[in-house]
Image (cartoon, rainbow, N blue to C red):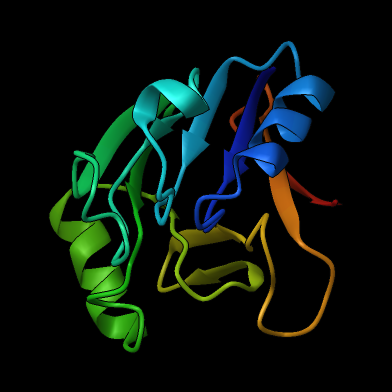
Length: 152
């Protein structure tokens, strides 16, 4: 089993990142879906992509990782989020069966046209007025993906 700590949209709030790291000392991957607004060294060991507010620091626009038999696209999603068709098309173009994304500040886990979309919500504030949160994503030995929302 592989354990992924998945966060997004901390908007410069590095204290929430510190708390998440303290609560998750033994993950296989630490991934951030953008709008970090902090120095990459400050959020290590998280690997992050750029969000629409990340103009002060250099982050890639997307990452693709192969983890536990899945090809995972990590992006903020702000250029595509308003169309599931565009998001699915992007994932399929990149030959990905899973997408980790942010931007909406709302936890989300669902499948669209065969692609699993997971948004950890915002660890700073959620627009749906729920508690700030992040996700623990587990990839089981048989390739099954289990997602747990963790409220801060």
